[in-house]
Image 1 (spheres, rainbow, N blue to C red):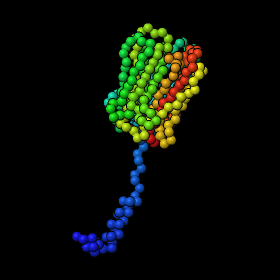
Image 2 (tube, helix red, strand yellow):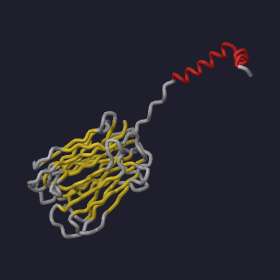
Image 3 (cartoon, one colour):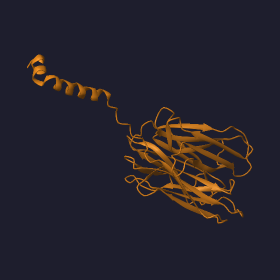
Image 4 (spheres, one colour):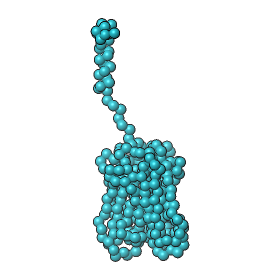
Length: 300
């Protein structure tokens, strides 16, 4: 059938319908892109304020949400307490939904203190799992281990756990890879003995991993370098991105510095966009040192 025959057969009314349909196809707005991390929020839980040698707390995501990353804060100890456990739950086949934080006094502390756990939670994310890797069980002064995401997945959060060192170990590095232009896929954890400890112990690195998230990158910020007793730095996500998790590094400290605060901002109704790391010298330390903070950031 020729074009002319088609026009005669359908008439003017048919032509209007055809043209209107074409215009709808051209002018109709595209559906808005889905957020990379819908329902993002930060919640917290706090232990009792006591002078007990060990304190712990669990921050649990609301029902229906999953854990992408986490943080912690020691309140009232000023470098005299070390975080021994910073452990997301979940497994290599199940998504994490909470984080456990346990901390010991390094030396006896008469003053009361408490531990606070932060959970960065969101609506379910595809492929979310928790990977755990533990190093050799030995009496070495320094332990290190890397947890890598399965092939095809990216890193959204981090964690660690020391076993059997009981307050005599300090995690110096919780360092995700990646750059401001590439997604992180692994976390490198390093811990030192705070005081001589002659028994064997282990260090576990935890990686929270998911299918690729749009725009996921790692950005960092470093404090000034000095021999001050306290140092801090804040890593802020680029405009248009939100925080899923992060990490830290005490540089040139070699176990003489305790990361007291690793705290994402945000709240129950607000997604986090930055994380601050604060660290104290555990005992007087004359050398210069600094603290670096890592933020894992995805598109809003």
